[in-house]
Length: 106
Image 1 (spheres, one colour):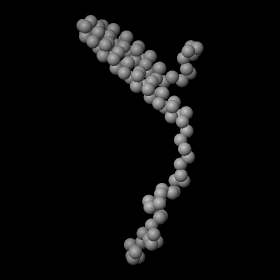
Image 2 (cartoon, rainbow, N blue to C red):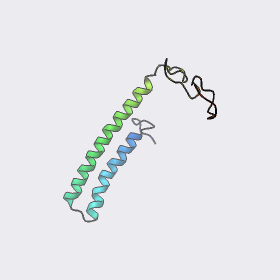
Image 3 (cartoon, rainbow, N blue to C red):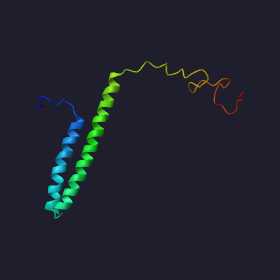
Image 4 (cartoon, rainbow, N blue to C red):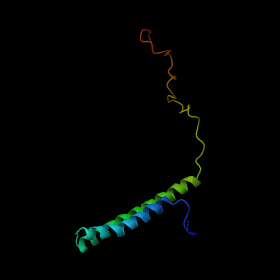
């Protein structure tokens, strides 16, 4: 069930929640397998720093994406027209009727 304050689709929040869970689980596993408490604490601090940085970047990315969705771009020109002097596509060569090597070209 969704809580009242949580949006229905929050992938960044899911990632941050799993990262927070791992920040709690990793030091426990390290201590169980013989790492010192100091080493586990350093690993926890490193994981917390990485998790915080990722959370900031994910939130910034979400805000940027939402802002881009709100702003509609202006309609573009037709895909075949590329400007006054540019070549629009493969069939726009003047004087060249085909790719037959026996026929002379301009």
